Length: 220
Image (cartoon, rainbow, N blue to C red):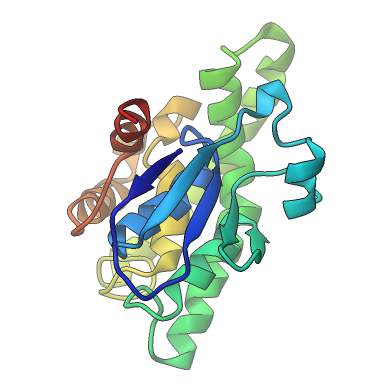
C-alpha cells in the first residue's frame, strides 16, 4: 500500500487497482492533480484478487478501480470516480452547458474510445499479440482511429482541451489510454492536435505519469 500526500479536510481515500490499467491510472492522476491524499492497494486480477468475496462486496462486477472512503462508501467505475473527485474542483466547469459537454466526452471515452484503443493495447502489450487474438486486435484498429480522429478534430477548435481552454475530468478520462495508444498500434503522429494536447496535460501542476506511480509503488 502506498500513499500520496495531499490536501487536508477530505475523507480518507483508498483506491484498489492496478497502475498499468488506464482506468486505474485516471483516478490516481486526478488525485495527484488535485493534491488529494490517498492510499493505494494493488489488486492483481490475474491472481483472482478482484474475485474474492471481500472485493466483490465493494464491487459486484469484480472490475477495477474501486474507491473506498473511510466511512465504508465504495464507488466503482473510473469515470464515476473522476466525477466524485472532480466536481468541487477546477476540473468541473461552472456552467451547465460545458458540464454536459464534459459528460458527453466521458461517455464517448467509454463507448467509442476505450473499447478499441484500450483493448488493442491490452492484446498487444499485455498478452503479446497471440495468434488467436490477432483478428480481434486488427478489428479494433478502425474504431480506434475513428475515435482518435474525432478527438483530434475536437481539439483543433475547442480552445486547447476537450471542452474549453481549461482542462476538465473529460481530459483526464481520455488522456489515460490516448497517451499510450501507440502500445495498441495507433500512431499518434497522424493526430497533431492530440500530440499537443498530451503535452499540455503533462505540463499541468501535479502531473504524474504511469511510470512515476510505478516508481512510487516500488519504493514503498
